[in-house]
Image (cartoon, rainbow, N blue to C red; front, side, top):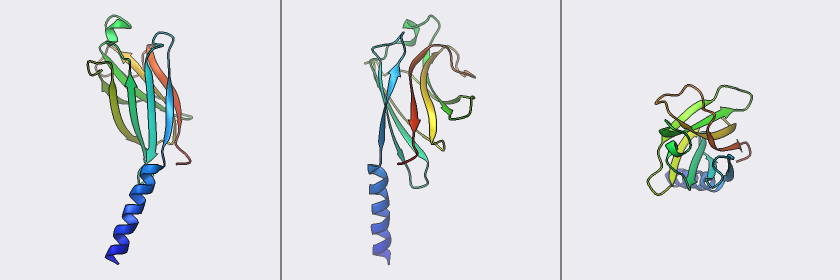
Length: 137
């Protein structure tokens, strides 16, 4: 019985690791060189796991004076209240990677530059955006 349990757990982990979808995020007109990819999977509890990789970033102040950080937002389908997921800075070579988990299956994902430490809503300075459909994983 213990061996069967180990095999089942291994199979669940393997299967959940292989069911992934990749979404290319689209850059804004102000940031056409920036690239972003969101790799999406589900965990064993049906939560959506997002691995976000961005490259060709630049310092936020280069887009607009006073901007200090990048912020990742999601806006669940049918809800017009964006949720702040995380803040980050590029790592010095123009790249950044972020992992997060959400209960939402369909949502818009966007990265903005912000000047405030705790913004309440996204600024108008969108760097990347895309729609995630994590329904059939």
